[in-house]
Structure formats: C-alpha cells, structure tokens
Image (cartoon, rainbow, N blue to C red):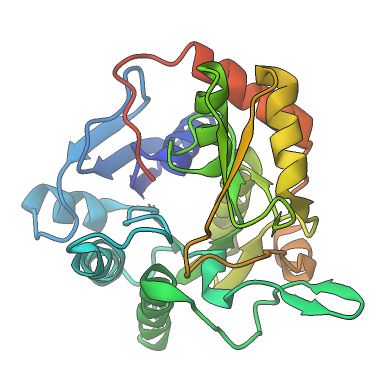
Length: 308
C-alpha cells in the first residue's frame, strides 16, 4: 500500500487531506507538533519538522508521496518573535522535507495566494492573479512563502519532483479560529459583534476546503513541477460573507476595525492553469459552505486540535 506523508496533519486543511487519502486507500502518516484529532485515520509522528528527528526522517524517506502543509499561518501576526517563527516554520521546516524526501517522490507544497500582494484593481474590475505574475508579497508572512517557493525551485533544479499550490481563502469545517468565517460564527453564537477588518467592500476568493484537498491530490498525480492557484475565480465582498454567516447563526452587529497593514483589499484567482493541468475548477456554494462550517462547530469534539 503506497505511503502518503502529510505534514501539518493536525491542521485545518491537513486533517481533511488525511481523511481523503485514507479513503482513497493510501497508508497515511501525519507529522505534526500536535497530536492528531481523535479518530484520525492512519498513523502519526508528533515532532517538530524544524528539528532533525530520526523518526521524522525515517518516515519521509519511506514516502511514496509527500504533502507539506505545516507552517506558521496568518498575515496579521506581528507580536514578538513572529518573524523568527515564520522563518523557522515556513522555511526551515520546508527545507528539511524537501531535502529528505527522495527526489523521485512527488512533493506537494502549500504556499499562499498572499505571495501576489492582492488582485489588481482596473477600470474593468478586478484582474485575477495569474501564476506567471510578478510576486508582490506584503508583509513577513507572504515573504516567507516566497522564500518557500524558491526552496521548491531549488529542488526542481536538482531534478526533484515538487509542485506548489497557492490556495485562496480556504473555508469549511474546522477552519482555523483566527480566520474570518470561524471568528464570525463564534461571535454570532454568543451574540457578540462580528469584527470586520477594513471594510465590508473588501473582496475574497473563498475556496471550499474539500476542493483544495482535491487540487492537492491532483497536483501529486501530475508527477511534474508546477505552480497552480487553488481558487474559484469568483470574488465575494465581505458583506456577502457576513450575510451568509448571519443566515445560519442569526443576526449580529458588525464592528468595522482597522485593517492590518499587510492585508490586501481583494483576492481573486485566475483558474485557467488549474483547469488545464488539473482538469477541474474549484466552485464554492457559499451558503452551503458556511452552513456546513456552522454545523461542524456545533458538534466539535472538545479535544480537537486547532492548527493551520
């Protein structure tokens, strides 16, 4: 049975990917600093990827496919030590994975749409971000992801297999609690205000976590270097996201707060390469997505680990 190794397996996207790979019949081993959620399929190694743990190295060397999702998430982090954490978790940890996994083995790495610095406003509307665009990272998080992509290019130059995914605003069951929809659902549950950063007119390309997982699996199956957006090509104003939240959680006041300097006003994916290489285009039914996320939050197990 082929072995799939998933780093960041206890995180938001990671736990969905582990479930998908196990359902596809693969032997799955998750690697994470945190223990796996209760009932997670497969095996797990609890370790820090930035340290050379013999157990991690052994499982990476055995991999038939590797998915590197582990990292330090969030564009708004600016507390003490955050720059060091981003470098350690987003660059050093990735270097370890890219160096240890055999070059003939496909590695799929999750980068971020933040490397683009946002969609461009034109007289005709928003111009979607294309994979060939010049990268314009804003802030330390986005810059760390650009460095990560350069490390992936180094592996390709050595003859190794690696594909890079650039997901756009991923949402769905078990979303990280610091992300907008998760924050708003939690606030609405207690009657608190929904904190919106910047403006209700800001735009996000919201992508269903299930479709992101599908894209990652398809990227691995390519067995060739590629960089691909995982987004829908449809932008949603934050006002529409708030409306979807209040439709399932009940009305709640909205509080507009200043946006972080590193946040962009709009994100929007160009989907042509995804459709051409992966054979599909992610689609998001926003009302259904938010309803699923709300339902999952109501039955969340108390020991479920929150992670990127």
